[in-house]
Image (cartoon, rainbow, N blue to C red):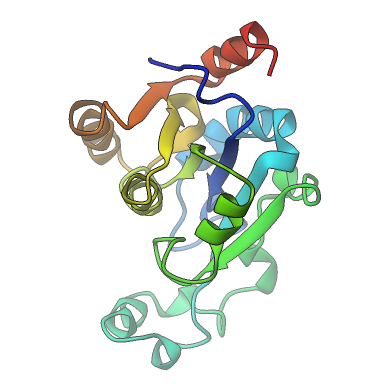
Length: 202
């Protein structure tokens, strides 16, 4: 782990897709989510005013999706908004209580960078470093991390606050993060991050 004073006051926390959609027994159920939820909750509690929750919002029907996403939702028809109870789109109940001061950012694709003005919002606040938590490690977290690196952000991944759906792909992705992006990305834990903040009086 390498953390430096660049973190300072110029950081924000992007919490990726910690939604009931993935926590409950749906076709997209991710059992790891509840395992990492306590660590994510600790991180958000420490930094609620700096946290932006992304939410993955499916289309109303497959026909409302774009291009190859239509095929995707034909494969997962029960995960469209036409079929899903609306409350499943929302954050898991333990995290909903942090909004506000935390904010939400809705997206219809894996990346949060291709729609809306997330980058502009962060830039206007002078943000240079992003702490990224949530899931899944090899899909939406991956899209969030690669987009952040492309846009010039320093990225910090607290490993105990990340979830995937399968050990093999999660572990492989962590290996790639460590080996290919070590200059722009640091892997740590929530407790190590807290310790750094305590030492730097942040």
